[in-house]
Image (cartoon, rainbow, N blue to C red):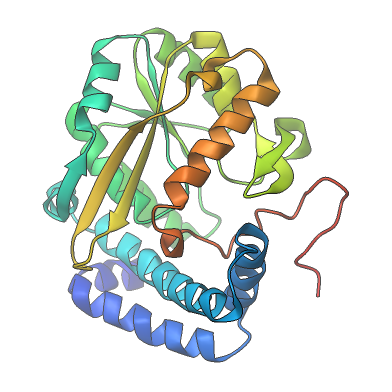
Length: 288
């Protein structure tokens, strides 16, 4: 697997994106798992769409997701400068630099949206992040990912209490961490809050760290531009409600912030993730 990924990373980006589009055509032609889950999530998140609009968004989302996965393979196998050269526009850069200059610590929240892995290279231009890393179960994939991570200045910590304590200290000393908060947490690490009109179990890690450290919390995304070989970075200031000691208020504000970011290009979100598997009432929409 390691050799396959290394060889794939040597292929031109346009070729990988074209390959992804071919794969998406096949997946969209059948009731594939990625298409089925994407359709369920889009129905839940955008009930106002008519049948034609929903079908178009589902097809565009499956295509974008296939492109994202192969874009990851490419950027992981290339030096950081390659990723930096792919950026077309960077909006809100001063939001990040001002937050770093305040030395209060910075949590960068990034949804599973666009080509978020490219952001590693951009963040490492400005600082040395501390990020959580969970080893992949496939040894070849894990080796490939570790090599990619080790190209940067980031400090990797485990996804457990040890890692959380390390990140807390890093924030208190004015450092920066990156967290993707839109995953479905374990019951012990989440509370129910609205996300795309669904009362769903939501992760508490960002809110708890933010309330304890009173650090800066900013949103970051990297989306494909009209030229698919280029990407735009968007850095946004988020609501101060995320710093609230009222956990429910904080997570509500964070979920709405992620929603606003995703709505800028909803077809580029990873809708094939079973985000709404644990909703209030215990109804699992993904059961056939």
